[in-house]
Image (tube, rainbow, N blue to C red; front, side, top):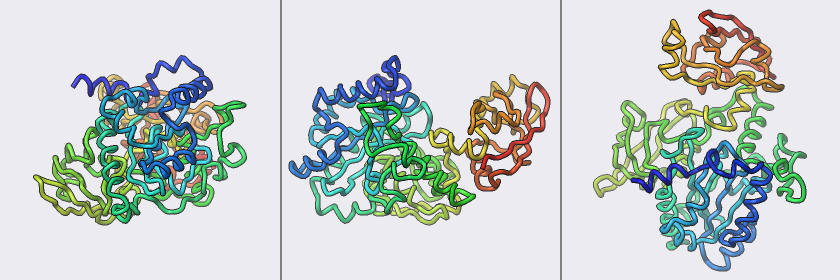
Amino acid sequence: MFRTLLASLVLLGGCFSISSAQTREQKVRSDKEKYEATGFWIYNDLAKGFAEAKATGKPLLVVLRCLPCEHCVKLDDELVESDPKLRPQLEKFVRVRVISANGLDLSLFQFDTDQSYAVFMLNADGTIYGRYGTRSDQTLYADDVSIEGLSSALEGALTLHRDYPATKKSLAAKRGPEPLFAAPEKFPLLAGKYGSSINYQGNVVQSCIHCHQIGDAIKQQVRSTKVAFPDDVLFPYPHPKAVGLILNPRQRATITRVEPNSLAEKSGFLAGDQIHQIEGQTPLSIADVQWVLHHTPASGGAVKTIVIRDGKEINLDLNLPDKWKRLDDISWRASTWQLRRMGLGGLFLKKMPDAVREELKLPESNWVLRAEHVGQFAPHNAAKEAGVLKGDVFVSFNGQEFARETDLLAYALNEVAPGTAVPLVIWREGKKHELTLKVPK
């Protein structure tokens, strides 16, 4: 118990790392010095990693570690390397550490770009054994990742590699369709601002493409061609808990709890079930389950699943209705800051704890969202120009009331055209105030 708690405290510790004393520039440069000095990882050189994997016959482990992200989460690097079980497992892989998205082959490396620590386990020919790395909160992560969970995923990848190429056909769906652009710097939002590699001779930080900027670029590309956002873009990589599946972060795709009245409960899933296959794929982690959900249409359908229950294989259909992806929560995502600019004029709204609501003596129980942040500078300052202040409680947006910022964002982006003057009602100092927000174009 103590070791698991200790791991949780240091897991994904970008927010709590002692390296925060360094500047962002120093953090990137010291990371390079540290890992090149130890020699345990191939540093920022995927071509070398693939070549070595091909020459040695070992599987390839690629860690995408977004640096110098100060407000994100990651598996603590030193803990991973020193863990007595993980270290021998890591030594069975050719290990590559990639610390920027510049030049990343997006036809191969497709993942939830709001993660800051994403792991790929691959064959030298580019076949993907599995992914690892999940996040569903800005700061809380013990429910999503653990050293034990990573170890289990690595063991599963080693098993698939040992049986390769017999397993190759079953792994085909773990590789996605052709991307919009071959590499991040090819997106119009990023083109001309970034190169195919980071610049250690100049300003490293300004030359680095962060993973979440890929998500930003995808959303901007949609916004430039369409008024509304498809649910597949707005709600990427739905977390299993959105459909009621609470998976154990320390085991391989094993269900800890099924939420009452959820889609998962209605589909027959039970606590203790181990997901053996989902849409024909063998999941090694929560991230692998998210991969399948990501590619399940927003219009719904039956997700074919085989679970192990009491030692027996049970076939289940996870039945998903139309618009099921909207059950997920996107408010924690870094890429949501751009959506807040587009739809809410730079507002960040957060649900108030009950104690805060009682303190404010709100007359209505359904007023739960409060302005946590109001953008002060263009182009994130439309809400400020409308007169919204930090601490304002939101009563209605365009005549609609919302209990989640996620639902408000989806409405603002899909139901309100850019440039529209939207009436706002807010509660401030015991009174209602009517404001008008002009939705940015």
